[in-house]
Image (cartoon, rainbow, N blue to C red):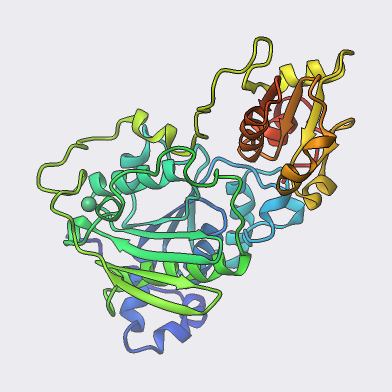
Amino acid sequence: MPDPLPNLSPGELSRYSRHILLDEVGLEGQRRLAAARVLVVGAGGLGSPAALYLAAAGVGTLGLADLDRVEEHNLQRQILHDTAAVGVPKVESAARRLAALNPHVRLRFHPEGITPANAVAVFGEYDVVVDGSDNFGTRYLTNDAAFFARRPLVHGSIFKFEGQVAVFDPAGGGPCYRCLFPEPPAPGTVPGCGEAGVLGALCGVIGSLQALEAVKCLLGIGQPLRGRLLVVDSLTQEYRTLDVPRDPQCPLCGAAPSIRGIDAARYDAACAPAAPETAAAPPGAPEEIEVEEASRLAAAAGGVLVLDVREPYEVQICQLAGSRHIPLRQIPARLGELPRDRHILVLCHVGERSRRVAEFLRAQGFPAVSNISGGIAAWADRVDPALRRY
Ligand SMILES: [Zn+2]
């Protein structure tokens, strides 16, 4: 038997009066929200609006799992956090904001994030899980763990100007994420986690829709997006709903599943960059070079050239002293400016665009070209913390 629903104080009745006025919510629905436990995975672009609306709605226990710290380039869309929170763990920054928004909500934080070791147990402590993760590894882990914990998962994702929302609830008869996409895309076939652009307000739309679906699940009202995928094109403002049937062949929730538990190795490589596939580099010029080694070569006399292929706006954010800047798209037309007798180290933001340029230069006959693995982001992490990150 479920515990009796909590009674609401006069202050709570006042706070939630616009909910209670709705026949479909009413006093009982609001008390049901007060008894509910919702976990938001990720305190980023989607998790920010989702957590804010769920806290404001009076969800009794709100959990937040995130292991990152707030960075300046998060603030364009992650509205849980503010400028003063840069450098602070996201769960800490979120705690301040959410507690200030609604002191009636019991907040729980999982600063270790969602991991293969904790996911099923943590999900089991909540009624609904909202997925605000931004990478395929966590997305698949969250899907699989929600299945094993038998909890409905409110999925949301965005790519450039498009967003998607669905409720995955195999225990309730619906499909799971793997019914749509059985396996993560091959490494390197999609832009890296830190590389794709995101329109901030679209995060607000999709994260708010996720909060809405979670509240509907908790109240049992309306028609949740169970078995349906909402696809939002923010450029045309077209909202399409696609039927997503459960796949009997699904490797997770199908009749003969191949995934029978959480195996950590399954979620590791999902956001790894593509392995280089060009012919071997000449002796002394490895195809990939770590930032520490690149830094040593760049500082030594003897003439390596660091070729920065990022966009001009990125160079304004941060750059390496002594590097030469030619944006990626201008490389083919400006090959004549590049020396063929020097070792060229190609640099971009996270090492993916630069890998393509390095392959291109080798194909053009440049004898010694290396890609700087991890790009200037890794350089800022491991060589020069004074570099501004983005
Ligand atoms: Zn499935």
